[in-house]
Image (tube, rainbow over all chains, first blue to last red):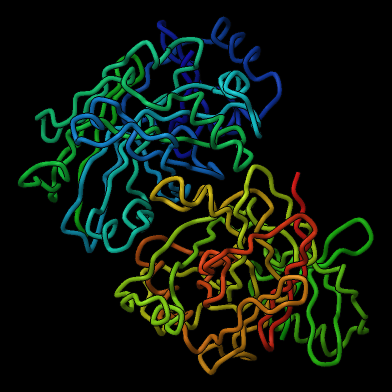
Length: 275
Length: 275
């Protein structure tokens, strides 16, 4: 099953889809939908009963618009770690973003006061149930599904101090979407190709089977620290190929089109705008 | 003026006070109060008209219960920086906590799975108006007031990776309160004594005049990155005297009483409990 938040006229609605297309639901967004007990049975009924509609790519918004917690994992792709000569980490490196950091799958990424703007294609884990101090199996059962993100980074701000958040949390700079594919329909551990292209040129080309800490690992780990709830997000880190790793970095420029895709989930297409 | 969130019977209420005592208001907490236009005039009228009540220390809860953003500044006390031989930083070191990280001014601090639990007395800036890409003067005008916090830190978790948040954001471990003193009534730049004692023994004894980045600096800086709104919090860093800085650290133990105070604002008194 696929879940989304879509624009219908002037308002937003939850939508559910499968291979036959989409149905628009009554809830204002996918986060409101999954907060309701019994939502899955009702959505399955709607997919059976309701008329299918075609939704244009421009209709899709960020699926979970107000997560209370957005946690991100740093260095987490085994091939990229080996490539950079580092040791495989014992613990996940975590930092936070805010709900305000997120933007939609086709929105412009509007930035200011940065000269070192970089891309980071990432798999996102969407939390589907309250989870606190969970085992790996409990965490796995609490995963609603997966979506795509680009952890756009202001490297100059990120590297001003030891802590990264100021280069990672500019408002409206992290696209997330376009859909959440539920965990019964996709398994990142089995290997999903993850790519980022700039103006059509592939910059990152990784595979989610290379994750050191997978979705269940990360959710279980974070849940030792803080309780997560439906709609909270965990960004799982990026594979090799970011500008920062180039001998002569090719930073993002005004007008660049960043395309971020994960096989079997979906694609983001965002244009960079400098204010 | 002082603002608080207090327990009245089984529910919570906003309260306002001055030298003559407290009045209990109709709003459910101080954050709901300050979100309303014209709240200040109404509170001043209530302080003039309503009957004063006496509130026990146990009645005070964390004043802003659901900030969307809690930003914290690292190394920020000039005397402590000089003492440790570091250079005075050009930019503030920022990290984030969550609303769930906060707890009340007399609540137990309940922790688990840590062997290196430390204290960090901190001045908190409480945001009173929406603020985005503000100048220092605009930021200054958007400060509601100040309160007290202790950025209790799980040093073992904090030092597992380069990013600190996992050692700083255990649920319910950062006491904040007991009151917000409005910015017209107190000026940290003029110098407020800030202390932390463990079981009555003073461990930290600093002064807010030593802040490298003061309240307006930090709010203006953070507002370049993300829009802040009424009730959001900025923790401004801690002076010297934490356990981590001791040749033989005296980590917090089960039953320890941590008292955190800022002159002219108030005092937190929390007992540490290991689960």
